[in-house]
Amino acid sequence: MTVTRMDNVGIVVADLDTAIDFFKELGLILEGRMPVEGEWAGRVTGVRGQRVEIAMLRTPDGHSRIELSRFDAPSIVSDHRTAPVNSLGYLRVMFTVNDLDDTLTRLCRLGAKVVDEVVNYQDIYRLCYIRGPEGLLIGLAQELQQELSLDDPMKQEG
Image 1 (cartoon, rainbow, N blue to C red):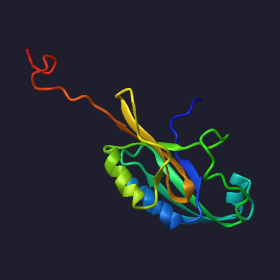
Image 2 (image 1 turned 90 degrees about the vertical axis):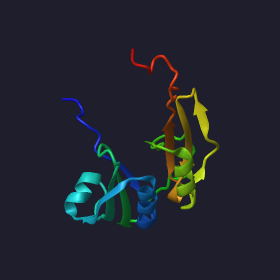
Image 3 (image 1 turned 45 degrees about the vertical axis):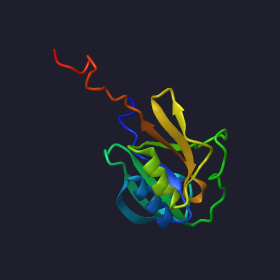
């Protein structure tokens, strides 16, 4: 059988409240927050004795989710949050936004920084990478739609 959907992307953070606020400002909806611990959890992840608090956020269309996790135990063993884009492993999460400039203004107030610059990709997208809370790499893309003028023959009924 093939995959029927992607359920979520998991991101481990040190400050769960700050990460939740960031993704809520981006437009995701907090579905819930809860502790996860117990012998069963360690058998799933291979990290025995874990105590984790998770928060699940979903995109407004309901099709995608981010699971944020903050580990109380055991101690964090490595940190990849500020790895450059040519590093192996997790790269980034990309979101489509309605208004890239407005989104950047709101997220920069929460400490986000554009990695290099906002670019226009073939008049199809304006896009950029940002570093969000804790250096997380996030992609943002705004679809560019060419507006048809009233005198455009393709728009007129005939």
